Length: 142
Image 1 (cartoon, rainbow, N blue to C red):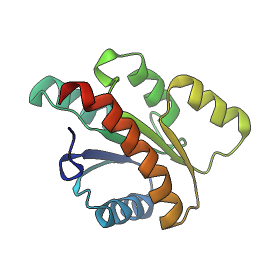
Image 2: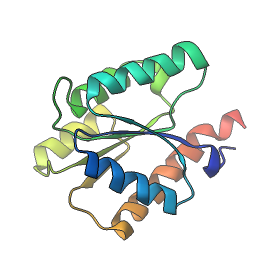
Image 3: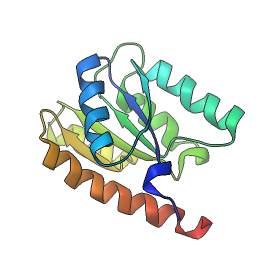
């Protein structure tokens, strides 16, 4: 069983303030193993390095849609096409709210979608569902 204190998160956003907001909300939930990337290219390097060199991976990846270099949707699409990321929850945290964008992300395999701006209670409510998804994915490896 995956324990909450062992959950590893990667927060990917080109705005430092948003990375801090997500980090602070995660810490209030007792999730403290948090890494950061400023864009999708840096995030993919961290994701790939973790799998290739540490035999572990991030459990949750928070993605902003609009970022320089590689955007969050492109990173989501790339990761979802790789079986190594089947048990990783991808959470889109973005200002993109058009129905077509949300549907596109869902079809690609996003685990949850949090629209900016959001409150701490909205974040925790979405995270409860993400944690349930993670527990379900990891119960067969307990």
